[in-house]
Structures are given as structure tokens and as C-alpha cells.
Amino acid sequence: MKYNSKIIIFLIKTMSVLFLLFIALQINAQNCAKKKLASKEMRLDFDYRGQSLFLEMSNGDTTTLNVVLYSKQNYRIFVVGEQKLGNIDFTIIVPRKKFNRVMNGVKPKKKLIYRKDPNGFYLYNIDGERILEGEEEVMDTTWIRETTSIKELVYDSRKAEEPFWVAKPNKTQLISIKVSVDKASKIQKGCVGVYVGREYSNTYQFRR
Amino acid sequence: MYKMSVSKILFLFNIWSIVLFSSCQSSKKEDDKNTIIPNTVLYENFIEIKNVGVNYKIPSPMEMFIFFKKIDSPFLYNKIHKANKYSEYMSVKAKAINFGIYTADLAYCSVFEDVQKTIEYFDVSRKLASSLGLDDGYGEKIANRINKNITNVDSLMDISADSYYSTKQFLEEQGYEYLLGLMLVGGWVEGLYLAIESVDGIDMSNPIVERIADQQVLLDNLLGYLHNNVNNKLILDVIKDLEPIQEEFDMLYFNDEETIITKKQFVDISNAVQSLRNKYID
Image (cartoon, rainbow over all chains, first blue to last red; front, side, top):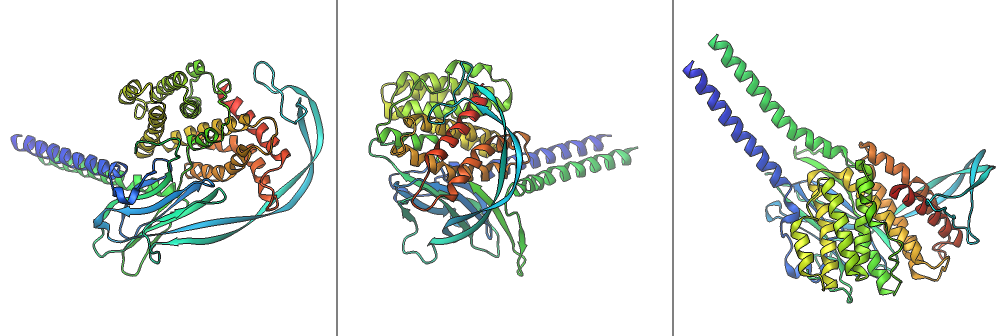
């Protein structure tokens, strides 16, 4: 009986240690955003709060971050990670979508008519609801969209002179940042930061 | 008797260990499910190559409001959501979406340097955040920062930005992506609504019109984010909610290269946004 309770205590202790270890691993996995991965010299005076990504990656992992860059604003993008991960490469791709509108069919459809102002904007009653005027039957043409996508590579860290990409797009655009951590025979886990920085406006100088 | 007890204990221990370590595994699998390209490729040297997934981010509404301020657009304080309505939202969906709407209004007030309204909307955001269990970003620490910087409008703007990003970060870290999705939708709709309202009628020469057309790209990314979390019913609902706006924005893809947006497209987008915003704040 005495032996039995010793075993129980031993198992409870072991379970507690394993549980604490499990919790510690979970916390460790979630702390990447709080780590200062990039130096001040690398960050410069840009605001990285909006669209940056911090995550835990292992050797051999890849990830993609899709962000939106507003036109006529300066951006600075780079990727850094913990030293134990070794080399981390990234490419920046601008996907350019082209659409063709293809008619799918025509079918009658009942449509509610709401009151509009001379410019075509809906008018609302005091409760904020649209004002119903009646309904009509319309011939509804349905369209399908044929998409073709061209991907333009604008930065490759393996070939670039600088470890960062700076841009001031003429047009607001989506960009894809593809990150890959080098393979290694002994796989390490570590934090990676994909820094997407927007230059502070002169009118509003943030403290960071 | 003794033998049985020990074997039972060992059995339970084994079960517990399996549950513990499989929970690590399943959370990883759950993460993978949320990615668009969850393929796992096994290379010849047996190093497992994982694709950690595709992540989507959109600029905060504040970035657009800074642009409004730069071009001297008027501050439409009477167009922002009523602060006293916050207590009427009971469901998680309504709370989270309106939390996003109020944080956008907070950003708007802080960019336009209205200290009184900034404090008022910070308070409303804090209360809604708290009812969602999100004290990160709107807790006592930040409230103290506001009190200390009450006369410094630049700091207030910085603080409201910090609050927004801390909450976003907290939700991502805690795996509450669906709440973040709802909040992002609310904030995006409110930002777009205020942009539309900032254009006087259908003055297509207003530079804000171009920013409104730009929201097409943001919507694509926002939908990408939502589709990553499509296993949640509330997220499915908001994807459906966004469909009428998406349909109107899709029409922009058919414009020729010189035309960013036509008057009709602007009006159609405005109507779709107004309808959804009304649905959310009611």
C-alpha cells in the first residue's frame, strides 16, 4: 500500500513536470511578436505595427505574407530571424490579376425598388432603413469571371544588393512576401519577423 | 489487487501522455487546416518541409484617415457611430463587429485631433473589448497613458494605434482569429463608410475616391484572411455579408486602364457599404 502511494506521488510529480513543460513550450511558441528581432539600423524610422508578421518557423519551413501597399507611400520590407535558424531568404512578388467577363446566362429576377436621390444614392427613413417603393421583374444577366494572373518578381534576397526592399508604389497594390528558412540536418525552431514598414507622415511623427 | 491498481495507474498515465502530446499535434494540424496551401512535402533526405501557410494582412483604417487629414478632408463627427449604442450589442458577432467599428471611429477622432471624442470612443472600445474578454490593448495601462497625454494629440493617435495593434496581436497569439476577422470586417466597413461620406456627393475629382477604389485590393486580402478561418460559422456569415460589396468592387476589374472607378460604380459601392453598415450598427 505504501509502495502504491509512492508510485502515485511519483506519477503526479512526473505529470506536473510534463504539464509545466507543455505550458512552457506553448508560451515559447507564442512570444515571437515580443522579441526584438531587427536592429534599429535595419528598422529606421518606419512604422511596422500595421502589417508585419511574427511567427515561429523551423528549418525547411516556408510561409507567405500577403499585404497591401497604399499608393504614394514609402515602404520598407525585410525579413529577419533568430540566428539558430541560419539563413532566411525571401522574395517579393507582385501578382497582377487580369479579368475577362464572360456571360453565363440571362434569367428573370424579382428586384425590390428603393427610393433614391437624384445622384442614385439610397434614401433612408428616420430608422435608417431604405424606403421601399415597390418591386419589378428584371432580366438578370449573370456573369462569370475568368482570371489570369501574372506574377512579377520584384525582389529576391539571394540576388539583391540590400537585405531590404524599399518601394513607393504608384498604384495601391497587393504584394506577396515568400519566406523560406534554409534546410539543416539538425532542425531548429525559432522566431521569424516579416517586417512591413510604412514611413511616418511628417505631420504625424510617431514615437517609435 | 495491488497489481491491478498499478497497471490502472500506468494505463491512465499512458492515456494522459497520449492526450497531452496529441493535443500538441492536433493544434498544429488545426493551424495547417487554416492555410491555403497545407501541403507537406517529404524530401529525399527525410527533412520534412512544411508550408506554414499564407497569411493575410490589411492596413488599418487609421492609415486611410491620415490620408484624409493630409488632404484637408473635413472631420465628419456626426457620421461616426453613436457611442451610447455599445451596450445594445449582445451577441459575440455584434459585439466583435461593433468593436471594430468603434476602434475605427476612435482612430478617426484621434487623427482629427478631437480629444474629447478620442477619450469617449476609447472608453466605448474598452468596454466592448472587456465584454469580449480582450483587455489587452484597452486595459488600465493604456488608459493611464491616455490620461498622461490628454493634451498631446500626436500621442493620443499613437496610443489608439497601439491599442488597436495590441488587440490584433493578442487575438492572433491566442488563436481567436475568428474574433479578429469580425473586428477587421467592422473596422474596414466603418473606414470605407467614412471615406464615402467624406466625398461630397459624387465629386469624382476628390482624391478619396481613388482610396475608395483601392479598397478593392484590401477586400481581396480581407476575404483571403476570412477564408483562412472559414470553419467558423460567424466568419461564414460575414463572408456572405460582404458578397454584395465584393460584387460591386469586382466591376472595377472590367474598367479600362485609364478608368479607376466610374460614377455609377462609386454609387453602387456606396449603397452596398451603407446597407451593410446599417445592418451591423442596428
